[in-house]
Length: 294
Image 1: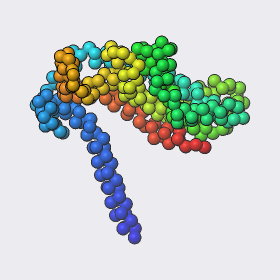
Image 2 (image 1 turned 45 degrees about the vertical axis):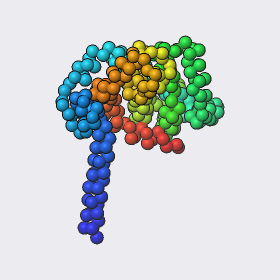
Image 3 (image 1 turned 90 degrees about the vertical axis):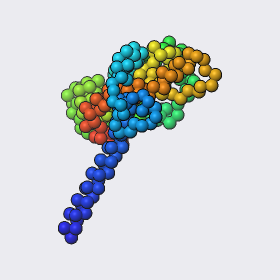
Image 4 (image 1 turned 60 degrees about the vertical axis):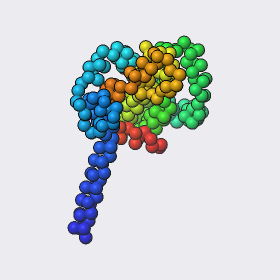
């Protein structure tokens, strides 16, 4: 029986390894394919001859990108958006989560505000009122529209709230005995202990601000204000060729360069790929504890 159990265990382990390797391959395949297309000849990419290896290997697409000032301008806007958006969002969500993690005895409005928060998670005011609010505040065509347009993700607030509530209550009592107030308890006690969930939420926020393109499309009026993903989305969008002018046809020819667009998409993925490994070790721990209600 022991021998059979050992064989079954090893068989299960090898099966699990094979399945995980297959899933990893499927996850990496789009990245590799994009890289292969970006390093291939335009004719081969247009003919669909590229799969796992570049056809007619060359660096022409990346050389062309070096001369594309619009690409780097959009890249810089996205960097500003990520830095400002992640900083502001983390400050707001952390400061919002702390009082909501207290009991109704300590914070009387806790239950009412929590229901309001959950309501906004399920329902929103709609696209048009949101757009009119942004424009009325004078944020249209500014970096602040991209940063503040979705500055308080309710799901992230709830994750941090639940993580704070899972911390031992004895910590509060010890801090109160030592004379610590709410601000000191938050920044010297709760924030250091909540590094896993804060790192997880930071990763969510960075990926959101870097990948989101719709706000740039709606809240900005031209290419000079586009973040990177909006700029790229305009490159790969499907265009109706009916009733096009000569200038529009010329622009369409530029957008049809698959190798150049693949190179731009691949470069746009690099920052997230570089950031993720540093925060990944906190991800499972943070998302698990933050999603369990006490």
